[in-house]
Length: 239
Image (cartoon, rainbow, N blue to C red; front, side, top):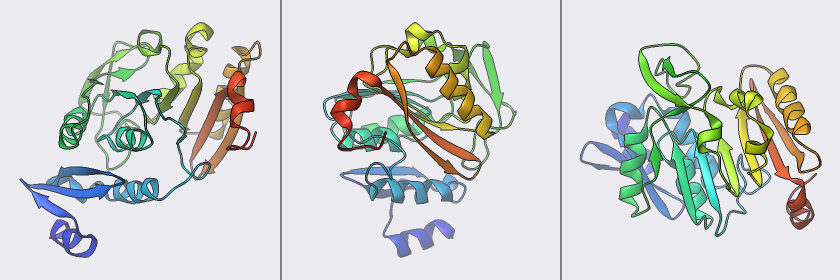
């Protein structure tokens, strides 16, 4: 019933038991049996469709750039980056990768998805919980890969992976320096933001600078930019 109300109120379309809505210049959908559980996602999608940096949670200056999307959920951030001209988006998503694949196919976009989590253990089991899958232990299990195996020369690395961003604290500096920009959602405690800042400073030798920290309840968004690019972007961001 709620799904039907959504279609009436927001103009969503029902197709093969999926709710589909317009998102920027693309379309995005999810199975009707999931729509009520993902209420916060639709609000997030609406905000993404109407934001402008620095109000956006992610950089929009990605034209002709390579993006690594860690924590792809159902593909909404990949579509966001493609909308702003990303050359290619590689997605890491251990739980909802099938939804991502369907949404990429829906929009005739390249399919480049790895169904893994990020971390230094071999395996993790989580609970599927509304908009925070991954924060609690459960029975949904998947393999983990170390950041060093997937972080390469990307223009932007985005992390929204319900805690896996803390694995960067163990990642070697040589790997972290491969990214020109990092946008990440930081969980659990603001102390973790401080720890990540210190990690990037440790890896610094000059290349990284914290750009912007946006408190968001129990979450914080941490933006880190390669110092060599800072002068180019001064007209777009506040250092």
